[in-house]
Length: 628
Image (tube, rainbow, N blue to C red; front, side, top):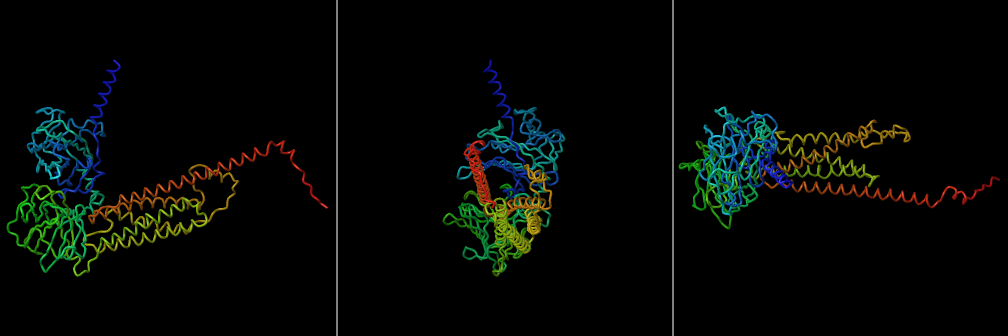
């Protein structure tokens, strides 16, 4: 009977745990989407599952769920994105909240490429009260596709556009402003029909809050989420600068598009002709095009297919293969070829500049928005890499171009000297001033003054670099505001340091002296103590902001110039620095402890060696003084 009770308890526990879902806060954890057609993304399973979406347009939202599997045997047979009714269920949701029953979902079956809206009336597939297709199917652009590559990996994509508030009032509504709860599920592999999910979870998402944060540059989007185009839409492409010297013979300039695998764009302007080359350190099909907003849809692109030996200009009117339409008559494209040599693929083309009548015109001066893509291999299928950037082709004309990348690299280096070296050193010296009691104050003041000068120079370099950029604005990112606060704060800190009040003379035997010094928290009472408290709090607060500022700057630099971020190395440095400080503090505490024990031992030994009071008096010898 006892064993039966234990078994029942274990079954209940397992059922309870299996019914719980993992929540992801997409409002706080979103970044710029790696899919050029989408604005934002959030990782649901690291290296396996991501959810992408666009800002709501009227009453619709575009969504995409992407699953990556190591092999076809692990690829899901279906994917699902569900919607929990937050209007009817107003309580707080948690991992133990039953979310499935009563929700709606978009489910895509790989076997028949069918994507529909379903009502989740129960956990079993049923035509009436279980998992069943809804009567009103209002999805647009709904597809589910699987792409396999030569290395055996398989990508599954569920794509759809859904109405926030459906015409059928019985269906679950989504909020544009306020928290939504989205459900997701991944079906088991090798099933021809809808069955039990292999993995499941949920995410919370406030569409309006994400849109507002992205506008302020708080996602992975550089330059405040992109500048607005003439039609009011967002341009998601980063503004970049090219080098004035190309490594490719026959081209004047180049830009490093991505680092792994390496891809570079080379170009030269000869009269009204742009000669361009997209060089990719691997063998794959390549695409290079012109866009108005940095996105694929509505763009024009030259696509080179090595397997077919063709290079054609296409209109990308849709995200599907059917939407990639060859442009037969194009006056602007003069020639285009794709070559492969030694594992390197190069797409070369010559295109006329400033041609009127083209849907997208490449201009000789001013910003052009380019998109690019590279396949997994030579077979034309879903791209493995893609992105966009904006560049002024005349930036390096005549060798007079300014390297904004170099200016921002200098800005970051100087700021690092200020807040990763000088400022921490000032705080460290003050903390361990007993080790250098006579000279610590001079080192502390010098370090603070150097922090001020380095910060001032870094701010001047950043403002100067941004002022000469095209289509940019100051203070459109938290990094800019924190930098301003640091400059004002360190200026106040240095000036306040020279205004330190003198030490008050106090009676060490007074009661107020002991009341003030006893206890862990010492409340400042005199002007000197108030100054010391404010000086210490301001210094520590600014050091924390400085650490954030360096991390933020490294992330911005990596995003703007498509380089690998060295932020992990910075955090390693911070960790080592903190470890050394803590170790030194413990060593000092240990040495002080040994010193106290030694003094106590000497005191005990002295008392025991002198004997009792009575015994001591017997050994006393009277001292006589000659007063004559």
